[in-house]
Amino acid sequence: MKRLLSALLIATSALAAQAATLQPEKSELSFTFKQMGVPVDGKFRKFEAQLDFDAKKPEAGKIAFTVDLGSVSLGDPSFDAELAKTPWFDTKRNGKATFVSSGIKATGPGKYDVAGKLTIKGAARDVVVPITLASGVAAGSVAIKRLDFKIGDGEWADTSMVANDVTVKFKLSFAGL
Image: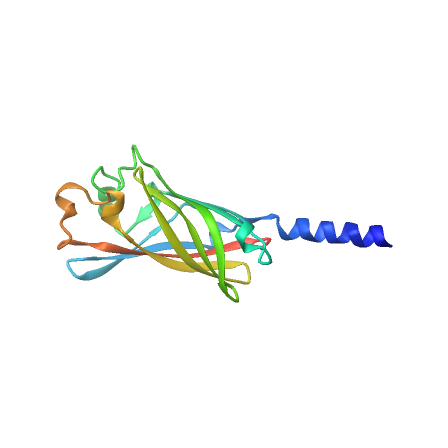
C-alpha cells in the first residue's frame, strides 16, 4: 500500500509540472498605441508559447513566447506593409520577437509577476509582466516603450506623431494547465 501511495504521489507531481499546450485559436495578442493622439489597435495573428508551470511551485515555472512580426495587422493591408519595413519591425532581418522568463512570483490567488527578457529587432530589455491565471487562460498586459526596441526609427522617432508608449495585451489559452 505504501508503494502504491508513493507511486501515485510521484505520478501526480509529474503531471502537475507537465508543459501546457497553447491553443492559438482561443488566444489573442494585441497592442494599442496613439498616432496623433488617437488610439490605434493592432494584433498579431501568429505566435507560439511554451509554458511549464505548477501553481504549487510557480517559482520553478518557465515561459517562452515567440511572435511572428510579419503577422501584424492594423486592419489595413497598406499599414501592415508599412510596419514590415526597416523603420518599424524590419521583418526581413528581424522576423521574430521573443520573451523568455527568468522568474515567476505569486502576487495573490491566480496572480503572478513574470520577469524576463523581451527582445524585438535585436534590442533586449528586462520586463515584468503581471498575469492572471484562471481556467487555463493566462491574461494580462504590459506597457513598453517602442523606441527602446528601435520600433519607428529615423523620422518616426518623433513621438509627436506616433507615441512612444505601447500597451501589449494578451489572452493565452492553454490545454493541460
